Length: 178
Image (cartoon, rainbow, N blue to C red; front, top):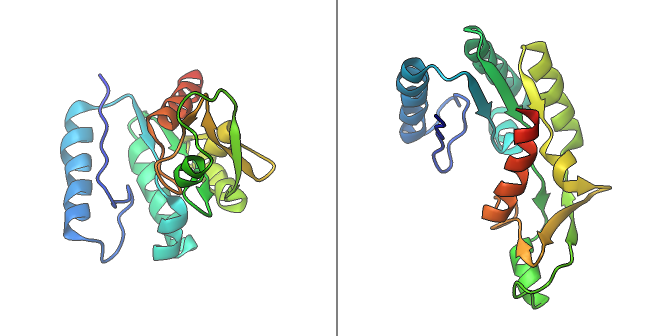
């Protein structure tokens, strides 16, 4: 059985002064979904860079550390998904401007922020707390550029959210880890 628990604009971390909606959602995931379904494997991902900017890097790391400790304590396998790439402009719009209509078979790469330092910290923290780490950047990027389209299909809906195609590529790589 696979569950997905996400809510638009909500971090998986407890953010001080966060919205009531996000705090209620986090409580539901913790107290109802995880507590009653006892998942064997939990994947946890976020726009970690945004959380670090909102909370401060040290506080974000402390909140993630606390979350990981709570999740791994019952012998669950926990995998932290690293920060994915973020483009300066929406690659979907750049692809449309180049006339991509789905018939192209080439790969298209654009420069993107790859958050190397943040991902290194996430990887170290994950390992310290007994969680695994999945490097999203390693699957999609090389030398500061990231795959924006393949076989004519865009991997992103905007500057950082995956499309169905992008999600599928990352999920296939993640399955190899699991």
